[in-house]
Image (cartoon, rainbow, N blue to C red; front, side, top):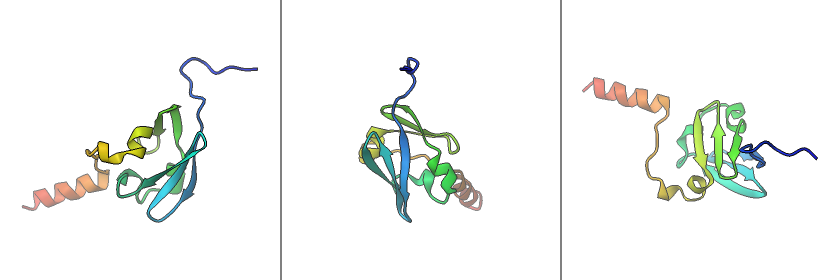
Length: 101
């Protein structure tokens, strides 16, 4: 039997379904739904970037192609984490709107 190195995750995260309003993530036998309204970083990105998810630990997920880190707590209770980062295109739109004032 081969054991994992200390600090290496034994959890496997897998995107099980992608819909027009969000996607389902399977983690340790539990399905979690990520709504694009609550998790805007995943909206309008290629499928291959959404499915490339790494389980950094039992409670920490990372999408390297998008540079997005989320904990299971954030996914289950997004209302507890009201601050949202903007996607690059949203930042550009905000900057363009501000510059035209």
